Image: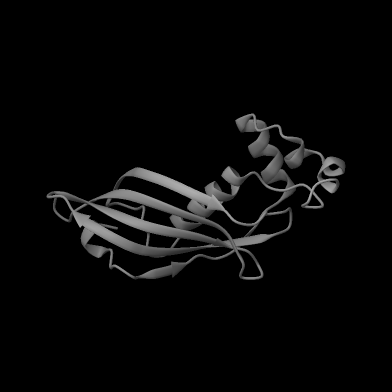
Length: 145
């Protein structure tokens, strides 16, 4: 999307995606996040979660990926770069949970030939519970620039 196409207050919601054991094992192995909370079911049973959980950064990555797949295409042709990113994990995501992304255009700032767009990404599980909240600021081209 180009800067002009973002409308403050607009909200989009992605399709769902189920988090699998393979997702967790590959992510943990690839990133070096070899925490037993992610990889050892017996250890996970001894924690307050009662089982293994997905790494928070995996949940964040999957949520951003779901946002990339939105029909509106906020990270398409007009996208320049991710400028800022922050997030808060609110609930654990476990193997078998299905998550979806809700994306809200929180604000925008004109900067001449481009603009900054602030997006709020909320990760929801299959019960509609908020499991993560993230704020992203992206740079977007203006049409014709």
